Image (cartoon, rainbow, N blue to C red; front, side, top):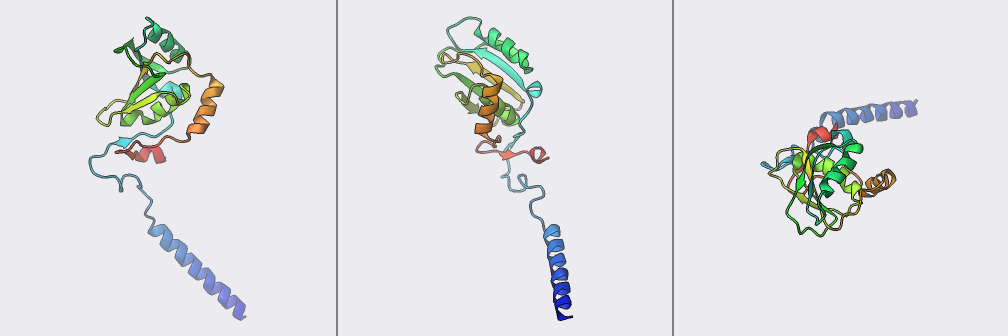
Length: 171
């Protein structure tokens, strides 16, 4: 009989503890509450290619390179907004330029360059378009298998320093 009373008392205490923990949950709205005022909210959602908007710019010595790569991106279902030239002199494979709304998209694009592109985050940028600037080190986009492997290696998108993850990314 004493054992039943002890077990019953422990059950009531456990239930009270669970109710208290749920009511005092401090994680609801996390990411925004802890975000310093003035910091932009970064969209860290990993988007599908059909939802990623890009500009393809050529900074190589090879004329027409941006057009060919833009066609390759279109074939992979990306939304190519603009195709054009950028100032020459980029020796890297590519440079990805993006703002807070383009963080998840830029993360996906990193995989298409096997994480060999330079990244230029601009917290003042207000659009969700990523500028893909092709450099002299560019040869070709990664295959689907290479992209999937690269995404696995990269992990989940992270908010850049000086920004906070958007609450929409938690949903």
